[in-house]
Length: 594
Image 1: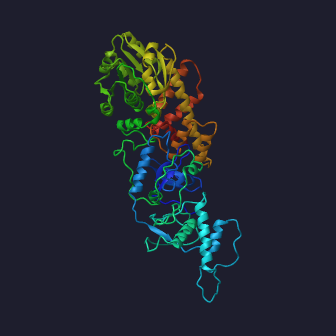
Image 2: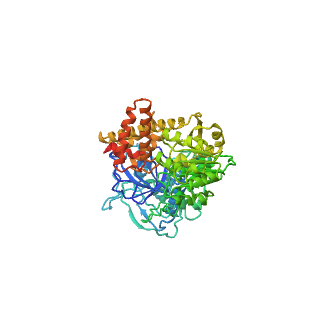
Image 3: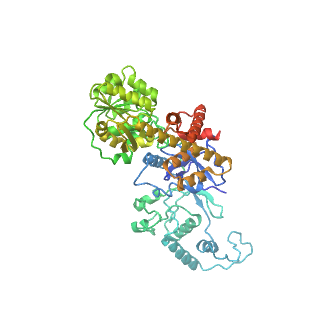
């Protein structure tokens, strides 16, 4: 089957569970496995995110033909605007001199077949394709032919379901002919009298036969096709999509079908802070900051910041998004990180920089901490120039790390023994919710401190829950949540691995998940990550395995059997041994399919 697309074509590509995204057909990469089903697929590079994947041909659309159809006006994902800008730059960078397909004028029977596809063709043999050697054919009067074709062309122009037609001002037609004729190529030349009506009608019929995706109009000021009104557009298949109506002089440019240059015009992550897009890990703190600033959901929040001075210790995957949301909501924030280089971009964004945890505690009223594990928390609190050395009476400390409850209780007791106020508040969510300010905060400890943190929790989360004064309650809740999360993703990975082994198309399996009772963001996003073999760390696998281990220890403490979680933990341990500890939790699929 002949493909509708070629390498270097600019396209809209639709992945299941995601909006259509600007991309470019590229040569397949060896490390990405081709889908097992026999449907035609194309290997698409996605602008903005710099990711790539196999996409079914039915979900790929030529960008120039659908330039406005897939543009979003609300709920715009991160990186979408940058992707559109990148593909527009690629479109502008294309050469303006192309070739045009020249075909002979179709016969009357061929035109009738186009208009009446179900009508039985005439048995009369068509000699128009053969040399007339001794054969005499009676031709109809030229005036009748012209009037008949004129009426048909007028009907074509008024038919709202007809494909857009081609203009002589348009630079080219690059699609291959879908008809049975073999076209000849020649350089575009503009002969005298191009605007004449007989030549115009001929071009209209050529465009109709070949399914040209462009608008036809005379290069002179005669015989122009009137565009649809806004009312007609709103009732068409473009419902819900805002279309920009441009003057006729720009229509030819807007509908041009060009092939991009061989060089990829995609901007690198160094050229644009948002080039890494939604599916890629943050290459730097600056990239995360810019992504957060462009997040529509966070921008819609109206938070009245507390007058208290806020400190934040730890600028990892979660900490970076939380700090940026605190800053953009108007809080005064002092930051510290073990790797001081990560503080630079936040200082540029308005944060203050502390030299060590003790100094941050001393200079701030409320200090938050979010680090990797129990060992990091102990070093941060009890180490040299640590939190405990800065605590004095009335100083407030909020621990947001996911650790074991014994360590959390030890930290709380040490803070309160120095006269400080303590609150535990681990968060539910991963990198993207942290950037969007959509985390769920679980809190336990001093109720007044929880109330004082109200504006901070509003800035970084969509919901905060106070679980009581008993320190450890929030940690237990968080471990149970993450235990279920890890077990679900492990089971999803085993299911996708088994689907491949029994000959099922994994894309079909993922689609059924996305539209059935199991449809949820976790299933959709992680199944797509498995399909594309992209394991950028939204939630690092090493942290998920750590949380499973802590949940199993909690189950041992209360003598609760955890058969499924224990099996899932073994699968994550295997994935870590295979070297996927720093990848996203979806990489547990590698262990399941090994």
